[in-house]
Image 1 (spheres, helix red, strand yellow):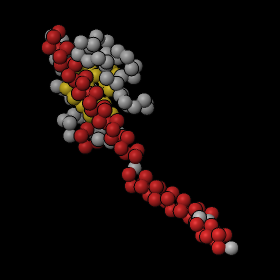
Image 2 (tube, rainbow, N blue to C red):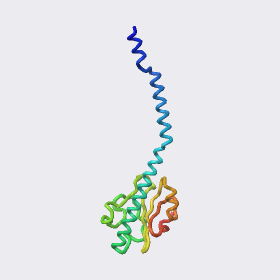
Image 3 (cartoon, rainbow, N blue to C red):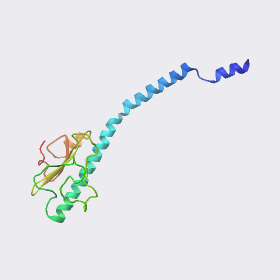
Image 4 (cartoon, one colour):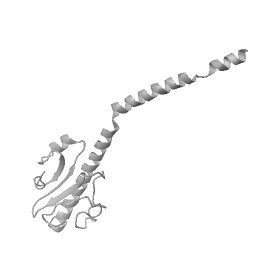
Length: 154
């Protein structure tokens, strides 16, 4: 009789297990709401966009120094919607691949435009709106680099 009582007291009942599981679900749900992983993903993609723009900006300036002109056809807006070779120039000497946007969603891409004496590269941001608004350009939703940030108009 004593053995039967001890084994009954040693485990959890189904109700206790369900109650513990419910509490864990509530705690995990609360943590997800507080942490908000989608905001971290947006910030991560924006950081990658800014890094890609800086890589492209460096490649454009190095190409200019070597060739005395900007890469690509003048007065044409280039967009990274086609992922390979979207600027019609060989930049392999300056960067291993032409940078593209980290998001594959519609509306997010890198852009490049130049005329005979200035250029601009930019990208739509998802999270870093303060950086985009304070980059010196004319569009608060685009992060812009170059020596004339008014070439690509909103």
